[in-house]
Length: 190
Image (cartoon, rainbow, N blue to C red):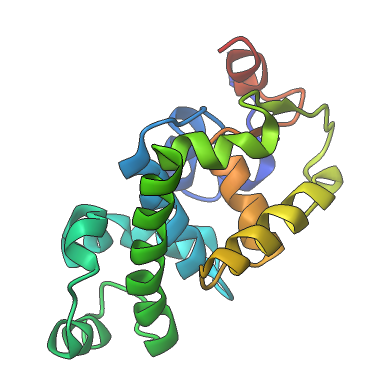
């Protein structure tokens, strides 16, 4: 029997695997939360499929998304990243990763973990939506507006409301699988 999936995930095998295994699963590991924060910011103006295809290269180029290492990137390292065809070669985006690593570590220090801080936006409990079609799924919400404003105020870059909502979907703060998708019930029951 063929599994029904969210429409966006049927374009290629990589999207499908990401959808079937990761998308919408609640994440509480700071390292992975940072990785997704960076990748969602890199997506700005591009498709998620593009970033997902470069994810392994990103892990290598950005030292497995270790913020303690990234905060020390000098101009030579940044120039190397701008010449790496395996990542998005945009000076503002490269610089934002370093800025975001610094702010991420400040938040960890202030709140004990980034997980504790970011999940406070939903009081630690994922929001389960009941969308029947992908057309119903919003690009942003009032909550992602608040998150974006808060993160910008703390100093994060490339963190607009649409990026925040995509981040919330990716890390499982919201379950936006359509109700007919086989993952909807699986995610809901986590």
